[in-house]
Image (cartoon, rainbow, N blue to C red):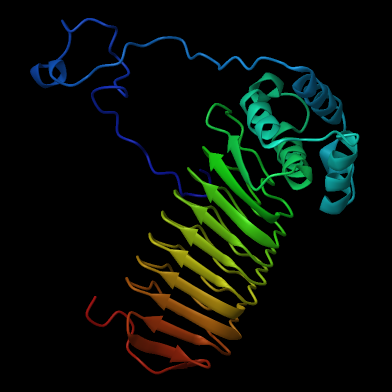
Length: 306
């Protein structure tokens, strides 16, 4: 992920061994007893095209010819994605198979943005409740997944780009990886779970619902949120609760500096160390079970016992 949230993965013996060629002669004694995976060229899953998938693939190819950023706003972009479906009926299986074949279009047009809008339009129009979207074989991070979700249960296998669950009203989104900036932007309800890290401004303008991050969070967590809850099991960086107007933020790990800047209402609870608290006109900031700041006044000692 960008914005300083990438966690480097240390190469280990076995499937992650970048030098194993199929022979154990060059391996250490330990490595000989650890299952090794022979290096082969990455294979793309071949998705067979049925007539329905061919129509969807052609519609998406035509959509990619349009300039995403030339359209005035996200509503217009979503309307264009809906129109490109041409009243085609989408099934749960269509959504999953289409996502598996998306790699064919990578590098064309505004791929990252149009992919998310198109998949969101498919999910929102399709009959069914549970949907699976595969992103693990796509290098580009797909933005806008779960846009305007109105009750569907969406599983994203792999990483997601920015604006996961943007303007969703209800339902759930599970990301089996990391998500980039603005997760849950302007969400009005429902639940988002990210098993990895999130980028900056998660919960921006959040009106209700819940966001759970099992990893770390970037800057400006919960910026201008009005209601709802955000739970981070890892650490968060600077500007937690910036201009927060309500709701609750819980951070199990540490949090950075300038916490609660221009915060008006709401509650922030941090169970680790806090880098610093700024001027907070309102709201409450807790460190574990101790109240530190209330309505703009320090009432406890920061990081005492940490």
